[in-house]
Length: 141
Image (cartoon, rainbow, N blue to C red; front, side):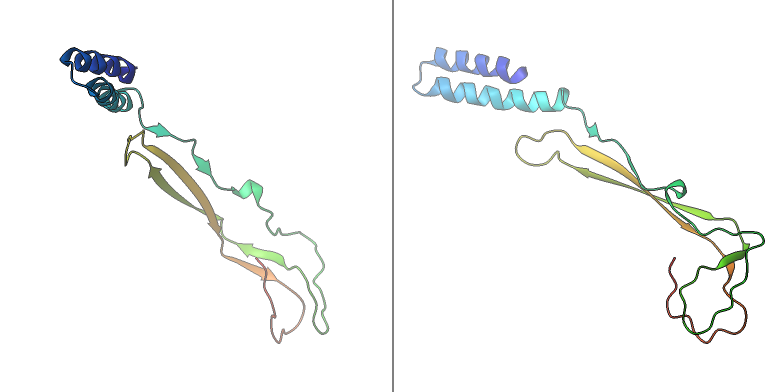
């Protein structure tokens, strides 16, 4: 709004001076000042919706089952263990804020966004099978 008003005012002042090309330059100068006023007063810093990462409810975790058979394994097999002891699950929250804008010609509003990610850790013992194990080839978590 200020760019329109100041552009017209700059054009009127410059045309009253009677200098050739002054009307166009006065209009452009007024619009430039008005644009800066508009961006400062009418365009507050924008804040985007916060992003939240997946939570434990979205994650499939291994469980324990009472009365589950203990496997007897010969050779190599792909098996799922049974949790026999565990401490509570720990949730680690990491929050970061990123911002952009507000620099360069025209300025514009500054935009910022908050992002939260969650990670989990647990200490536990998992029963795998009966007897000695020579090696574990792969553990998936």
